[in-house]
Length: 167
Image (tube, rainbow, N blue to C red; front, side, top):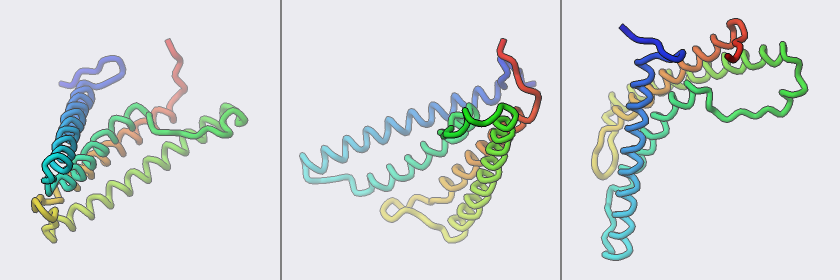
């Protein structure tokens, strides 16, 4: 049974912690790899040949691992140029509309990532030097974009419900 606490869900808490740890480990790895590559390149004139490939893949994982975390907390960048000029009722409607559009766009994004991942799988696309298969990374990105889509939908549905009061 999944426990609800503080309006959250234990499963989501574990997902957040797991993705956060993944991001931290990969970021440390990128830092260590970049440091080693720079020292090798400028001190020993021997750069790491595939450092770029590993860093590129790790950066993709970092960005997409953070995607659901930011979406769940509605932490995306927003621009509110006219928000103060709009009446509260219309403001609520515009927020709901923006959330639904975001959900739709994320859904299309997830679908296109799935198509790309399947193509990587079918063609056997791999990195140039290390020959690392690219499809697992694309499927991970699709999965996390899908999770972000579900979080975006949940955020939109929260806005559709009755306005919450802060207690």
